[in-house]
Image 1 (cartoon, rainbow, N blue to C red):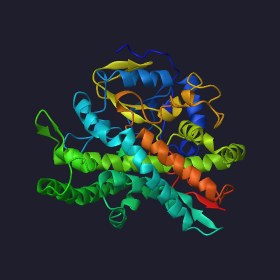
Image 2: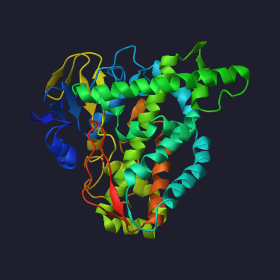
Image 3: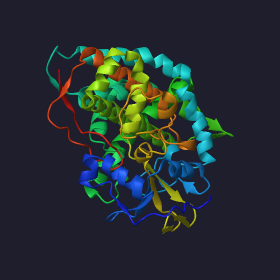
Image 4: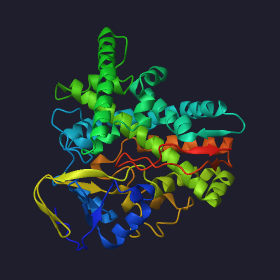
Length: 410
């Protein structure tokens, strides 16, 4: 890979800076203008890439930039459950074919009515006026409902076993910060709970398949249990990695994206009024929301050999953050990036980096878009003039960018 040699002034970047977590855009504007490459601040030894073109360049160079040590600050160990987001080719190439079948266009379309019905059910339980934490009451349950459908798990059973708490507390996604002992303990507990929940489920489905009571393609778990490549099946550890990955990548991120768009439409009442008046703009509104308020700041790669990143000399296996959210605000990517405009053309906004780029582009992107579109459309139909109650508190699980709660009234 050609070394990324753009010169830059010495800059630092800190995911954990309270000012950054309160409002990310000023920091991204500074990085985009002054520092295409920056050094992680404090005790975290990492670097960050902020510009769209450089992020894309790294994502394309899979021989140089690896995902094997995990998508966050912490270095994954070889024996940890892992899936897609933290494996490289050729292993990744095999696994992506297995999982892609679970996200076929026909199957995603088949979920639409159920998602809409469930969204309406949640809203129907609300009175004609009042106050509610829309994040916990609405944004969290919808993606969890969908993930349970994908996995063939009873949603009521999942809720009873604490799935809601895992998402609310961002317990699993906190593994991105290796220095916070409290978060590490929460993450370890969540991993143990997840493994304890899914392990008997895998056996149950395996036994049902063996007895002829379940089809190999009935749900994602049965597909993973029966999947083979050149006579080799996925290990239990690998399947558990998929389950945990989906819980975060397919649930927590979509939840955050829904709440972020609810918030952004309130902050731009003229855009909300436009969407209420023209519901056909919903796809464009979703894409602009994903671009403007990416639910994940970015994910990490490591370099397979020593290299240069701007003026920095990187040793082999250095953590480098690819800042999706910053790339989405790059003026070289899109005109007037700080303008929130739901009427932008999809052909430009859909090139955003929110779902990643290259071989690790999120396979569930179209499903997530559909969930967000349904959730926002149904919410506006119920309460087109909702208002915020107080100022929401930003969440602080490192690479996630959203809110812990969002109180609204109508």
